[in-house]
Amino acid sequence: MAGVVHVPWYATGFRGDAIEQALEEVSRLSLRYGATSYHVYRWRDDRYRFLQVIAWNSKLDWERFWEGHKTHYYQRLHQLGAGHGGTLAVYGALMLGTAGTAVGCVCLKPEWGVPALVAWCLVYALLFAAIDYHWRRKAVTT
Image 1 (cartoon, rainbow, N blue to C red):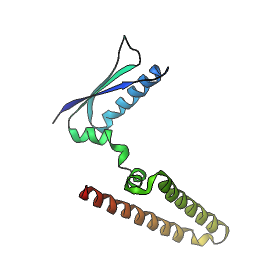
Image 2: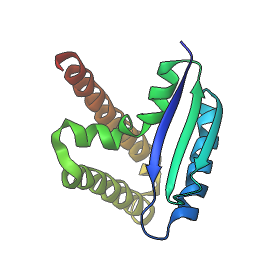
Image 3: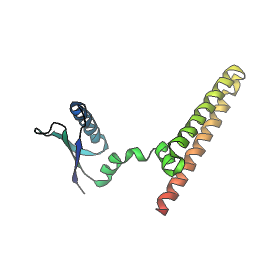
Image 4: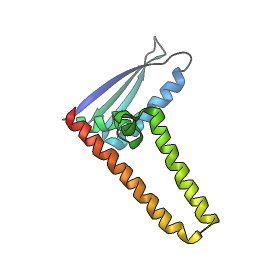
């Protein structure tokens, strides 16, 4: 089903030109997600008022473009209840763990580098699998 989406925007302060450039850039990126055309209109009587118009071949393409930021793992973990602080703590612990392991391998036992890398890849794969599992369970219950 083809359709056209109209998204009104209003810039605050003296940011009209910056918002116009940002809307042009984002609209141009929509072509990568399946949009067939786009236009950004700026009102002449109110220079802070904009209308973003994007034509799509399917509603699914539009939803992937508009809601794309909600499907990556950071947002999934946040929306599952960890919050920004909990999500940051998980990512921080993973970064510290991998960095500490790398430094330890370099300084103490370089031959442990490859097994340590494989172990951390498994940790990440299990974590992402757990997030996917809970994300799908949440989608089924809501």
